[in-house]
Length: 279
Image 1: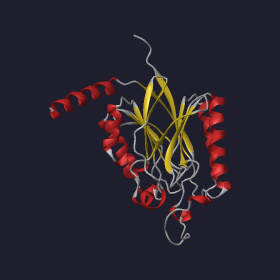
Image 2 (image 1 turned 60 degrees about the horizontal axis):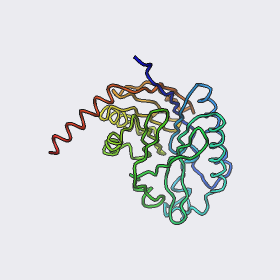
Image 3 (image 1 turned 135 degrees about the vertical axis):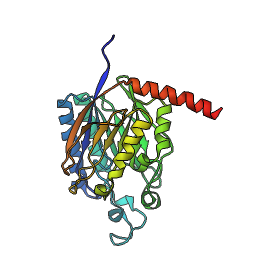
Image 4 (image 1 turned 30 degrees about the horizontal axis):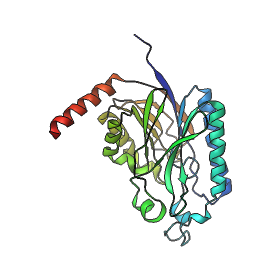
């Protein structure tokens, strides 16, 4: 029998920063990501997955054009876009230097209108090979902050296919069914909220998506001083195989992802059953 192919995946929970108008905060976020990239490379990781808001998770109150005392339309002209792009460029350059893939959630500026809330996929050559835009925006994000995305996105690394999910996408099982039908071995889920300690149920949702689609789930959340959620990797049977500490500290966890007979058998069963039920 040939040796089973594995991929070492690092998942990171970073500190939260909320002000994209602050050069200092954006610089600090970029520096933290680069530090974790180095740690992941030292641990032998091939792919590194970061949480939503890894560089900055913009606050609706910071961005409100009505001021911090009243939520209103976001004034994105105040964001330090050149600084953010500089940090992303430096991250991509380091990924190339280290020979490692990275998935970096970030706000993505559009020529007109509100930006996307996105996930950049940076290859081991330092190139942005694709970008996913959050589709199932919260009421706040949709009303005041972002332009929603419309399409699923997958990418391949060393024979593994991954889908991408961001924010409240994790609450919509049909998105994971879609990735199952696109042949994804796993889905990288980046999730953040200002009340992360009250959202333990979201990790249950992620585990359920893994079981329902017999796929790997990488679940990345921010470090939170109140504890609660922690980043981790779930196998196709819904079991945690690696987790960062749930003590609010920025941290990294590493897991070995492999092609699972459970994934393929489950996918074939679901395909046959859907064809039968739909016929």
